View (cartoon, rainbow, N blue to C red):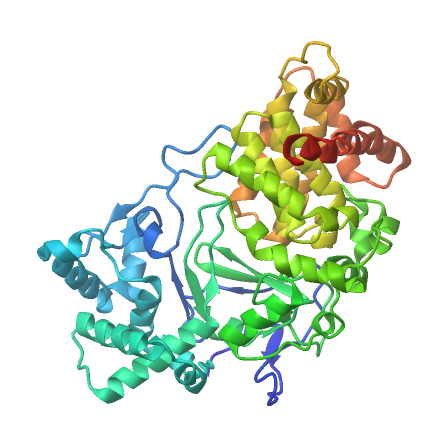
Length: 561
């Protein structure tokens, strides 16, 4: 039986929710509830990069190679990886990591298995053409479970919904799993008897149901994470906790205050999905119907924000007006209008896909189509509701690509003030922190731009507004706020933290900024002091509000039909 970290204990199992995890002590908002290293034999984990990132991620510590991509605005150490000379599939950032992984699993059969796979692919030209030179990520995770006795024992405590998977295996799902099981056993050099195949299929089901997705496009992090204790955490669309990954470690944080005896709950899925899509996702993969308060009452994002305690933490944020958080300035709640709910369901698929890979012309056409499809949400001023919020994010990316940074800055400010605080009510939320750093980058990139020649155009109006602002001090203050929240959002090992720290160091080292540095530092020490608050409102918040005021005009000018 796995050992639970201090502060946690198994809850009473119920037929509807199964097993659970309960707190044995209090945890403050943002506090680290537990740190799972994954190397403890009494609470083991599988931590792997996904297949496309095998060549640039350390197979043991999961550090991502950054050689040649680092900039002055980062304090993160340089990471380089080299391939294992045996299999040439696993890569390592150091001899220490290679030795540790060899002892953990790579030297217990994983290296030989990878070598067999590569040998077969390289010896068969037809197989080699267009075929990856490594096994799929779930199969590599399966191999680790099979090779590590402590992980195999831990996996036995996970729910796999085997019968449900087999029942739904119309169209070849079960045959695919048999094929994967036979392939794994074959590459490992093990007997492919019926009992072995069924045992492996059960482990595959457990991996499918219990694995965490480590992908973070902003940091290059990728792959899967499997841990029995974390797998026992139940789901809620109003979670009180969340999990973040730091290389091989998993950190369980409190999202709000958690008291002794209270169950720890996380979200398994994207909580911004409409209720119908959340229910479908949970039923399909996890085989249960969610009856959390949000699903029961069909609460939208704004109503969820209202229900979270500790909104007062936002007094040190870019959305310090607590009355607006408790009483959002919107025309109506989503659930109060059935036709609007139907509209969201109808446009969601079209408007929620990312625009990566499209030409700039196609992106512009898509943004124009989506902006107009979101007309009903815009009329209700529900800017925190997807897919409207997603369209605004895609517009920021587009403006970066077409070198309209001032437009990207305006929309970024709009999201930081009028969308993000409702989507992520706690100011230490990782997405809120990333959003602040994004705004800081725009402020830094536009600080040195020369004002446009006087005219009446929209771009000139934005530029002229910027010319009256102290963008460097605004950037410095926003960065300092983001840095303060990084440990609660993730950790001080987070690449985003190092990037923000590097940018802040660069600003603080500029000559002739002694007064500005003193003002920013005073605000950080005493954000509620009258003088400090006046500084923040006049130098930072009010200018951000001015910039945000251009956002909807920009979107209409660029994308309205």
